[in-house]
Length: 163
Image (cartoon, rainbow, N blue to C red):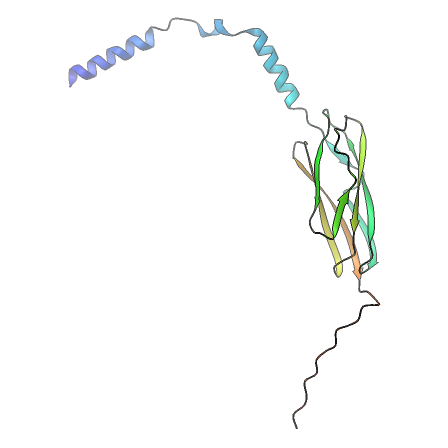
């Protein structure tokens, strides 16, 4: 057993000491420069800056359709691409945004339509999916939905009195 351990130890010593080549001589300075430039460019993200992040429609009657426009600017160093805009519920519909890349400094906009559903204070979130550093940005709409004056109240059941 001692001979086996001694033999393996000698083999390991030969393997570790046989590499006399200097690894630093194998580094190509051109590759290092290209990697540094690539890393610097990959840290540049577009930044989406909204003119407002929340819109309050105030008091609206139930089932009344309203809409607002959210404007945004690319304040980052790379082209901004919005891939999707979704709302937190089907009563709020975002639309009309450009799917083309937006150069740094350029502006765009999208419309959010709300159909007036719900009761009392209503708040809906719209999520913008883009190639920003966070990947998702949000804006919000709020409204106070008053009951529809033309709505018919359901008849209340009466319990007959037993005499």
